Amino acid sequence: MDKSGIKLLVCAYESSGKSTTTAGIEEALVLNFDRKEYGFKVPHINMAHYEGMSALKDKVMETAGKYQEKYSKLPKTIVLDTVTQWQNALQKYNLDKFVGFDVHSNNNRDTLAFNDFIEDDLIANGINVVIVAHTNYDADTNRHVIPSSGAFAKAGSFLSIVNDAIFIEKKAGKLIVNHRSMKLPCRTTLEGYPDSEKIEDYDINKHINMLMESKVEAEEFRFD
Image (cartoon, rainbow, N blue to C red; front, side, top):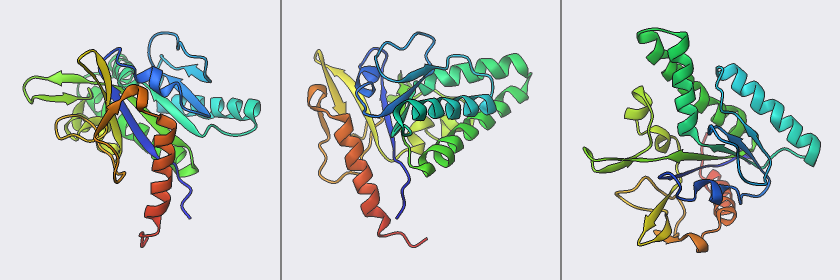
């Protein structure tokens, strides 16, 4: 049986409850990429300064080891909060280190390496990954987009690497969690799941567990 983890994207505009929602995830380790102190009483590490993928991977593994020492088990879920701030740090790092086309090629290289790290080092070893991202509204396309650069942006940014994503929307003074929409950056593989729900009715731990159960069920139909 495949014991790999699941991926879930949580996206929204600034100050729409992304970190508050993901701070409630049980047995989680938060990698805080934002350039501000993480404000929730959950295991976390501040990673605002990007110094290349090798250093990032080493830091994550080191911190996961410290988590294991303290709690006698590895984190069940790693939360990346936010990947859009990580991309900003990545782009600044490569802009300072390279010139011309090499800046863009290294941005693409590091982004692919980051996604491979998520898939090959975390997901493949049974750790769930929750990706937190800011969104912007693109008036030209009339769509909500997750900022990125190069080929990755054209491919759909972080929405392109997940099967399941929620978009937290402010609507009539209320926060709504969207699971399924043609116009919003969200999608779900869960049958019978609501298109949307009030944020006070949304249980992210229940959602993650349902995705894990659905993944196990889907493995029965694999041929490879």
